[in-house]
Image (cartoon, rainbow, N blue to C red):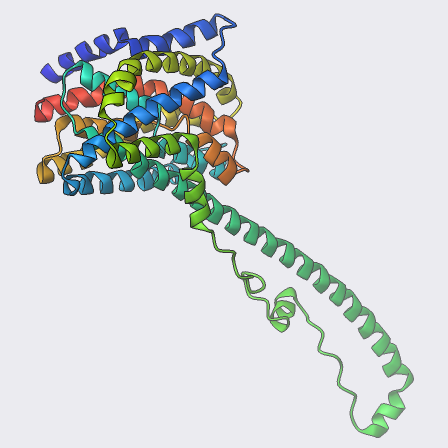
Length: 407
């Protein structure tokens, strides 16, 4: 009961926080038909500033910490990125009216990480004075890249199998057509042979035996046996191998991951503390509020797109963030008891697992799975998944960490 009241208190406070307030504000003004627009160049600059700040803080923290402490949380982040894709592959993809390739792309987007949700989670932890490992933000790429790579590989394998089966069906149909033509030819041959037997019966009697007739197939099964066609069709052609490195390379070259990894490298290999404290740190929350406003307007615009596809995407987008967050929270608890991973770090791991990529994921999936419908995976993520992760996930997992482990 104490946990429930504490959660409701934190949730009420979260509703009043600038992060969620600007998100809701963006949704409201878009719903009212406002023509307010944030130029795309400014949006990209804000995202760059936020992610390079997160990367710098993570790099500085890694440089000043024990690398061994990161190993288990980083491993769990990788596991979560891969696991989320397979959860979507065998749940969302089984729902009515949901195309498998769209479900895989959606799961990949939900397995990847939202830089804005990560930034919002860090802001709330700092505002409440909850300690966490500064390198926890650097878990971003450990979950993001495996999720996107796994989604693209799984989709490629699925599409390859589907094309192979389609080719088998076309081959089988052509074989049956050939068999039917053979049966017709055989019937004509038998009729001609019968007339010849009637005309030349005496000659055959003199010869002592009839000439052997051609061994025409009497059924399709016999025809397939003669042609050495198995039940699965002709022997399959060697399947093209899915190349992993180009997918990884494309993910690393994405604007979001590039900014994060650049900040991480600069924080790890240089001494950027002075510019970090004087420039990036003071601007962080103000820029985040603008980003939330943009995301709110984008979320409303995507709701219409989501209606065009199956309602199961909406159900998935409501349930998946919390499910993924709880699984990651459990893994974080293991790291907590095994290595001393802080409660704030456990909450942050759950928050990034609950998030769905809104920056790096969509362009990567568009390029890696071009046959998937962007309205499905982007609509589910932006319109429902991100608000759920921010409004419910952040206070829920922070409150759960405080209730179970203290702060």
